[in-house]
Image 1 (cartoon, rainbow, N blue to C red):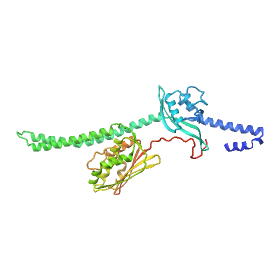
Image 2: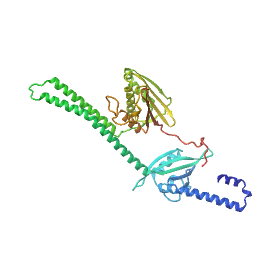
Image 3: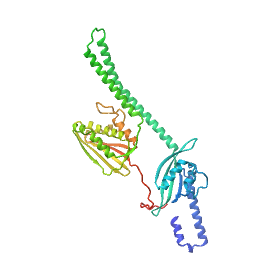
Image 4: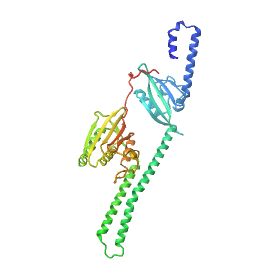
Length: 390
């Protein structure tokens, strides 16, 4: 339709009244269709000009945004909204010409609803002409996500509880046996061999310590982590941790190789927990290389993410158990809590990151941790990307 109008405008002087009438009728019909589509959308749409005055809005946006009146066209967006948090948000983002993606707000004093707002530049011929604001009601989505998280937490807690019960059973059995042996030693005897009693008590003491470690690990696994996320250097953290483990790695005949990217962007992290996660991965690699080997640690930037790789040339992981290694109390070691990699997974997820692995039995394992780079990008007034017309 647009090309037809452009051609008609070039021949405007040659058009008769009937052709002009038909042209306006076609334009009105197309506008009516576009208006019908716009107002039928379940998501809200707001369009502003470069001065942040509202040019266009649909009915869904009226339902979700608390406007002060129905007369909002050609008025600054923050002057017609009846919500302080939204006013401050739009002022900050629009005046600073910042992009926004999926910013959530809870509105309403009764039955609260959650809306998600994104702001994108409105571009024509490579220049920003205004803003396109997308509003989505995510109330039901948030409720479903909360339900899913509760279900996942309950399932994880059930698995952990089963694991704890299994782990506790062995030391309790050992304590019971050695108490019976001590009682038998003392039964109907005037004198007691202190050497035997001492051995029994030492075993009991060791098993009590083992029970304590099980409980401590369990509480660490189930308690919410009090994360204090701050922008920090992942490279610096790796260097400090490797320096701390230097002698232990030397004694284990492990050669360290690093390839840390220069100018690696800082990420949001809690250094204490991140060190714990990396320490667990390195300990896991040490167990996979009992006779020594090579441990390689790499960092790199990949698009909007920072990627960390921990690579060993140890025994590798059998394919049959690859999907189980992050499960609580799953371990292939003779001695081990089975929580090390579970805690790695939990810590990485608390950092809004992701952890995956590649492994081949007999050839080694690579753990890949991915973290988002904090975005502070501002929109440029002159947009130099693709020339899209809206």
